Image (cartoon, one colour):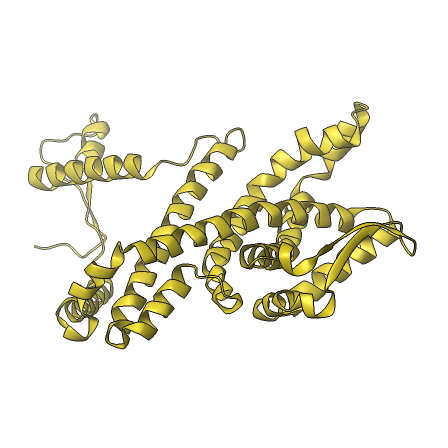
Length: 326
């Protein structure tokens, strides 16, 4: 007679009351049947297979033209500019965000007010508006000078010569990134237990040392996931520098699409794949950085993808052996 799912089957043949351990070792639990899970899995697999089939067989995508454009020097030059703008903006944005976060947490009302106003303004203004405003900044201020406030200037220089397309793009993205990074850093600092601040103060440690060696390293565990999310947004946000005449990855593809109208779709796919590669690399780096800062905070470090694969294969072999034994 068959047993219902989830029932416990006990093989008691040859078992006496003096041998309870043998009965326990002979028990086998039948898993519950989950037809809904298998149906959902089948539907998802069918949809994925249809999508992949259409992606491969649809002639509209022109994969032969995609392979032609993917490693063209024009595209690679644009990719290099995207990486440069992202790297400069990420570093400057993070430094600016740390300073703004400290200003918002400061006891000085002027620093708090200025920092809050900056974050409020830059988070309210669209990035494209900031970039175009900076691109036309020379129309407002033709020359910039350094000197005594409201007094004589020591020297002046032409703003249009200094503000190249690369400088405008980096400054615009950095100003925007600093506003968002400030809130990420401030949230990370506030997540540190207040007892850590009190213990550091009780030891008589200087404020700067407390922040660099005690507070900020602990705050990084909360900062890194959110800031990497911002960094991925920054990688994609570099596509807007095309509007300030800087030919990044998207700008190069857009220019080639204007010259070769029949290759617009393959060029967009080239851009898509490159952005997928860049964001995937950032995600991998994020995993290992988070794993590094998880030391001391968790009992065991999270497994790497290779360790997960090995564990999965080992569990699969063990399951197959158990099923074969039954």
